Structures are given as structure tokens and as C-alpha cells.
Length: 432
Image 1 (cartoon, rainbow, N blue to C red):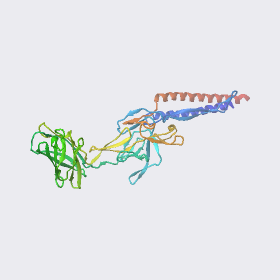
Image 2 (cartoon, rainbow, N blue to C red):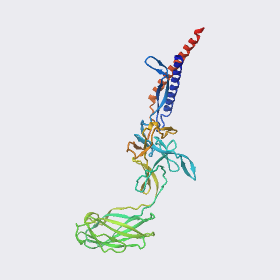
Image 3 (spheres, rainbow, N blue to C red):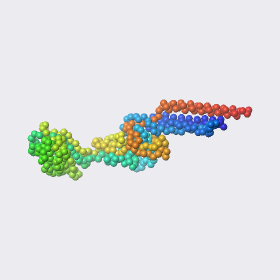
Image 4 (cartoon, rainbow, N blue to C red):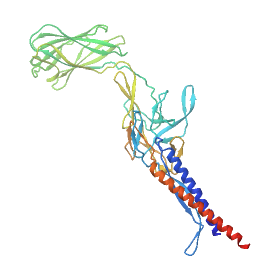
């Protein structure tokens, strides 16, 4: 019995070392695969009988020992939208299973991966090298993610709507010396269709510290928008510091003014009809009683130092970027940007018990537990490394060392088989 047991034990050793060799071969062949997690070998012995006076040979089995939680090297990539996770967690991904009416159809199962070599495909989806589609939370206009559902991230908003100008701010200085010559400046604004329009501001000094501001827009109907009296320093009903705006008065046309209050914004509103109905615009000239915005100081001619306005023309898609918090943002050629999704990180109670699939992907199992989705760098999830990929966690030197050991162990087991065979032959030949 012991001879047959020894042979069976050695044969189980051959089988176990063969499986270990397979694990090593898989690791070595995937040493350059992005996001690959190596498989180590865990040898487990099985007993036939063992006591204080008797031990019979049993056998050995080789079980895979997964290293899904062992970090691979995070390496910078030339791809600006490549992603790596520094720490625990997985990307949530989907797998395409065909098309219908030009729309990509996805497998209803949920997949996970550490392979973050994502690129935009021809349909605008973020797809990694293994063909898995990155999923994320949709966001609203304020950038708040909808955490109730995951969807494949698609860049489909290729046009940025125009934003009509609603606010204009001016920084300038009017000469303090008497001068009745009208002083003119212009600012470009945008209507509701994104077309540029010009608003002209004419300043005329009518008395010391008092100016009449006339607004007009050649593209509006009517072109004349109105006039307003701007009083500086001691010309105001309640005098303020010399050279600063004290109050507005005698507004005409579409111009609306606000009561003067020390420290309050010196703003007026006007309406211009560029063909789509009256467009209300607020003109900020500074702060009542404070230097800033429009002032009246000595210093030569009328000078405009700065203009700002919040309107933008229509824009076309320019580029896409992923931020460290997982926000996927689109930039347009009009200078605007928009967040379209946020990339979450999925964590598991026991990630080493996930089921492995083709393409460095995983699926949950009963043993792994349910996935928990979190923002990057929160609730135990790792950080996002943008513009980087995680390399395989295989160490070639270690694998080659294990290869030598497996080879020697396999050879040693063959010797036991040979010795058991020879001893059995000797036993059979005893009767001759």
C-alpha cells in the first residue's frame, strides 16, 4: 500500500507542479499587460492517515493564489486620458455586445478592471485596450453626480450653446479737468444666438464732477438705449470721496439705476433688442464711494483699463480631460468647459475572490461580496492617477526563480515515481 501510495503522491506532485508551471507561464507572458494581476501558487496537502504511530502518504494539490490587491507600478503615459488607481479599487466597465440602429448595445452584466489605458473610440466612448467601456455617474448642470446609476461615458455634446451677455464690468478713468468733448469707448457683447454685437458708451462732462453717459448699439432696434447722469465726489446728494462714483440720476430710455449706498455696487441695467427680443444687461461701473471701476482723477485723457463680459459665442468640441476627482470635462474652442460624468472607484470586501475574465476584467462573486462605489480617494478607494497606467504586478526575476524551483520539484517527483516503480518491480520479481 505504501509503494502505491508513494507513487500516487508523487503523481499528484507532478500534477501540482504542472499547474504551478502554468501559473508561472501565464504570469511571464503577461508581464507587460496593462493592469494584469499575477497568479501565485498555493500548495495544499491532503492526508490519507496521520497519527503518533503511523503516517500514510497522501497527496498535494495546487490552488491559484490571486493577487488582485497587489499594486502594480504606476507609469506615466503619453495618453492624457489614461487612468491608473493608486491604492485599492477597480474601474467599473461595460462590454459591448453589438449595435442596433447605430446605437451600441451593452452586456447587462457588470464588469471591473484595473486596465486604465482608455481612449476615445469613433463613437465617443472611453474604451480600454481590451475593449471594455469605462462607466461613470452622469452629472447635472451644477456638476453634481447622479449616484443611482452607472452609464458608459460618451462624449456626445460636441457643441457648446452660446451664452448671451448678461453682465459687463468696466474699469476706466475719466479726466478730472474740465472737458466737454465726448469720450467714447466700445464693448463687444453677444446676443442670444451667439452673434457679437457692439455697445457704445459716450461720456460727456456737463458740470464739474458730473457726466452724462449715453448708451447705444448699432445692431439693436432702437440703436439708442438711453442716457444716465453719473455724479462723482461732492456732486452727489450725499458726498463721497473725490473721484469716486456717488450716485446715478436722470436715467432715460431702457436704462435702470439703483439707489446709491456706500459700499454697494455701482450698477445700472439696460435692455437691447438685437432681433430676439429685449436682452437685459447689467453694467458694473465699480462701487459707490470707493476707487475702482470707473473713477474721475487727474491723469490726462480718458483711458479704459479693462473690460469683462460673461457672454460666449457657440463653441465646438476642442478636447477632453479627466480630473483627479474623477470628473470628465469637455473643453470647447470658445473657452467654456463642461463636466459630463464622474468616474467612481469600485471596492469589494474580498477582491481576491473576484472571478477572472478575458481582458484583465473581473466579475463579482458571492465570495467577493458586493461592489461599493465611491469617489476617488474616499471610503478606502484609491486615488486616480491621470495620464498614467498601472503595469502588470509580475516581477520577472521572481517568476524565473519560481520556474527553477518548479522544474526541480517536478524532476524530484519523477524520481519518486521511478523509484516506486522499481521497488514494485522488485516486489513482483520476488517469487521467481
